[in-house]
Image 1: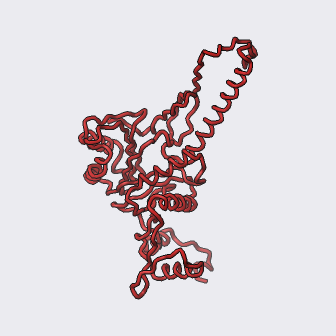
Image 2: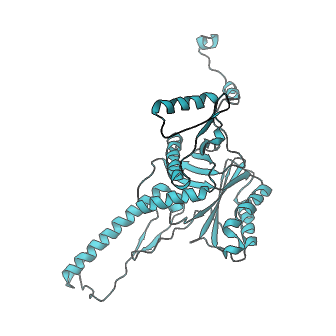
Image 3: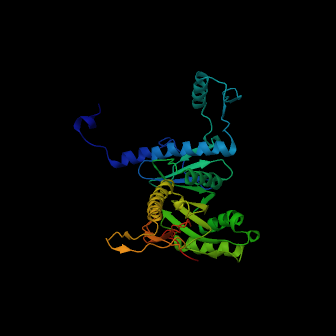
Length: 345
């Protein structure tokens, strides 16, 4: 026991700061320009969110691209490839050998890195189309109405990243956006969302006109639509790195919030089932007078008359915007206003 500990004295804060800056203090790599992957938000449960993200991404990536071919290099330079016929002990030996030999982290299909912001997880990937993979996950969740996660809130694909400078952002936009807003595509409606975390040198007042100018120059038919855009361009600045995403079906998939897709569908389903039950009871009455909710009697509509019902409810999305959303029970999709930080160019 040291003299300091015997005397009950605490170490100064500078001691711990210096220790944290030493090489090897963190085994995770940091988010760097040039990476593509997935930006995931959670609520103080980053470790659990990473585990869920690995399970989700590997499940759907195996369906789209096949199983990952894990290759590790031994001391003799020979490649050892995992096989389905190996038993459990052989698989464990290969895993231990990979850890000892220090297999390159960038060879893995998905690898978490330090994002530099709280409640934000960035998973680096080697798949060619991160947007295609995330869209398949959202489509399956919307179709099956099965909750796929407990800790993940939003899962956003990142097509490209660069240094958070105006020139670099413009170059990245000119490289990525033509695949979505090019002249040959005939024009799309779009909106731009900008989120800045831990950076006070660049803001949405700089990024919004910059991205809007690039999109407008690509095709004159591209138009801003804040209510129901076909494509949403998301620009996320985290410390010194700028991430670019282009999202389809942004309103349908509840801003790419996995939990909200199922929650909203459940609420709509219960409301619709209640209206269907009431309509069935009215048909059984055969047009006779029935009691209203307030106790008053009213005349039922004839069998040839169609009654349209319009209900208004509070949206339950993740965003901070407040407002009512009108929803028709005839089966039309609801339209959700974008985030508050959306601005027209």
